[in-house]
Length: 189
Image 1 (tube, one colour):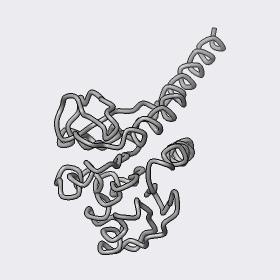
Image 2 (spheres, helix red, strand yellow):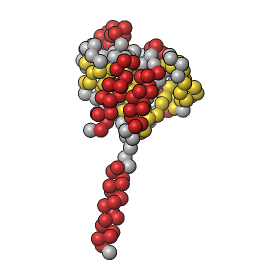
Image 3 (cartoon, one colour):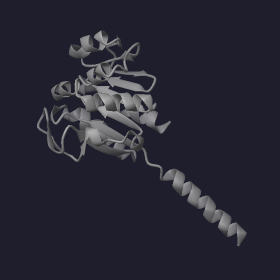
Image 4 (tube, one colour):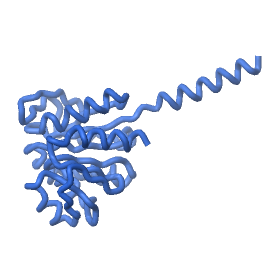
């Protein structure tokens, strides 16, 4: 009988450990996010058992630059950093509206302070720069946003994907898959 109890206890521990699902928050502009920078990494994460939530400045149907639509159920100001393993700021021309958004900047700072993954692709690394977390850090972005990174103390590398500590940046839609896979590998550690 004691052996059965022990095995049951052991089974419960294993199930608890395996049941600890990773969770990522993807932040998009409500208008003109870059479609593939959202959907390519999102699909990579979900295929690997990682839960993905999407947030923006308001709830409703957000529209991408290429016409994709996604339902936003979470708003930035309501996000609890403790519920996530990392955050991804999705690029596209609309992401520039988040460069000065206090909720987006606060989230980037809180995720960074809590040593969680902080990532951005395309123009969105500008949010991280404006949040002050790229000072002295290597980062990449879409070339037209490199000035913002440099002005805010980042070391712009121009690479496809750049990792510096818990910060991951990607250069644009053409590297969305590489960007997603890089984040996935770090999440698996």
